[in-house]
Length: 345
Image (cartoon, rainbow, N blue to C red):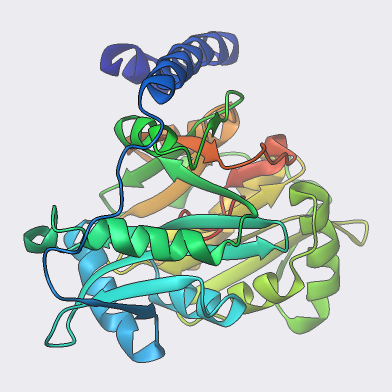
């Protein structure tokens, strides 16, 4: 599977891109369904092999969780973790050893009343294979209360999640791409500013929030007022909003990751010109960062072409998995997801 996948990731023609990765997803999905029939329950609950406690996260835990994520070289954002704690305080769990040191984390947070999104899953290396990950994962699943749930998963883990019976549905319209450019970014590589006639870019202020909420709902299909407000007010972040003739036509945010890079997300726009203008402003507002992280939709060719203009990105593909049913959004307007761990879109 690896060779065809990397062919997909480097494909520059939209038709070829779409056809190849749909075949890969179909074959992967078929294989997982066959395995699921043979072994529906991947694991049974067993007694933990070490002593540990699982509880909901607290503000004081954030530095330790971020250190775990740094060890994995994941571009998470401390202020975003704090924001999602306010949205769903019981949806983020940590595991602690006898010395009250955090040894693992996981989350399934409420995106709307009928959808929970999972992520932040990690366990310290020396505590792996000791049931810590299994117990914390199931504690988070219990929080979803039988509602629909979703997550991003690398190919090898997606099969395990499906065989457990918790995520029987795999998205076959797109993959999610985690991208990281490890060097300093020069926005001059982006070239469409001269084509942006009539587009006005405003720095976020509270009076713009109603327009953003309305636009956001047109993209993701539901209202996220509290989520957007918290996102726009996080420390070490910038948000810009695009307007034309007084109407919101896109917005984007950039934040400092736990590894010192700039992380873009969300980035929503009516078309690629607006998206490129917003991306340029976002990068210019965060000079001197140690690289750029951005999670894109595999089928959004313009978004992935932006990254090619900016440099050679390290890319990892993830499948979108669901518990009960797929969740639809206007994917053509999503140039970067809001947050890999906490948000479906």
